[in-house]
Length: 402
Image 1 (cartoon, rainbow, N blue to C red):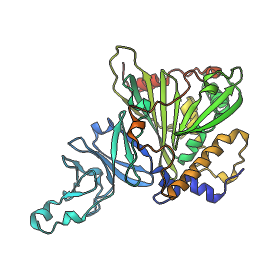
Image 2 (spheres, one colour):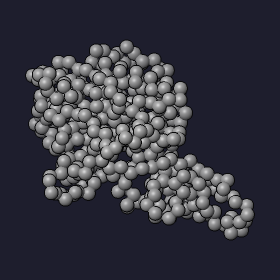
Image 3 (cartoon, rainbow, N blue to C red):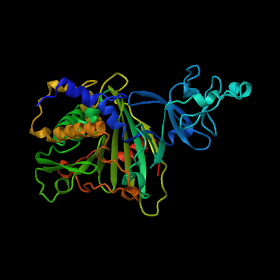
Image 4 (cartoon, rainbow, N blue to C red):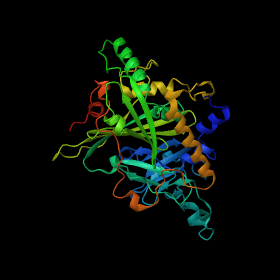
């Protein structure tokens, strides 16, 4: 079953006004880790095809506004964060988090009755902090509630965020999340081959998939698989783990769980925020959140598949900037991908009718105290993964000790 050119464009193009862009803008998207603004309170960012400026004012309010001052078009990346908002470095115009111009120094002094600033407004998107992450809403008002996923809210977890810039379309990352069968080849066969070439022992056993299944639930798709040697009482078949619609994968167990959120930068670039948690030992002091930027390519431009995350990212990037799905031949093992594309198409149509897409939360009672994500707690036993605790590796790389 091949995808037409028109269908592929509809699924992959995310700029303002596109059907997929309109859908993704109905959800809160991560744009940074809050502690990143401790060192540099003003940052240039790009998401969903828009160049923007993220800042934190001296009052502690977060703002996400257009990239340039509307006066003489100087980049607001060089703006000065103040109590009321962000002041342009060129002529001192000040913009608050709602995009209102609240001060024009020369004009306010010289022409106080003209009220020039009242005529100026720039693009601005609301920003909220949750679990150490900054989330922005790019869609129409009224905004839905920011989902209080369990890992973002629990107070018994230590957290690390690894940020991966990727030169490929966001859908390649998410199609992988709807494809369990790739694990036995991309991670086991190819992963072991890559480790062998590095002179290292195998990273896992190549367990075979017996069957796979996908169950739609209010927040997305629950992925289940039965592996060779397991019974139907195994967590991976009985429980599974969810793809949270539209662009998040939730994986892990009680001790180490993660959210992998794939946010489009533009049509050919994506940022993955890998939000990893580990359960804190009783009585232990909380550790500071760790942030690490990881580059997929080595200095000489090579891709080395020595970890599970790198193997996934190689699978995404190796399809090219935008995968040409007109050349695909989907089969029975791709039933999850087919289902996911159908949900995307159905929900783009819902948005076009003026309806909320799936997973939208507007009732506070649904969101409080948190949304407990049902997931397997004892998965991948058949693979006998030997890569170790990836959360701890991030902490070691960041030179932070508990």
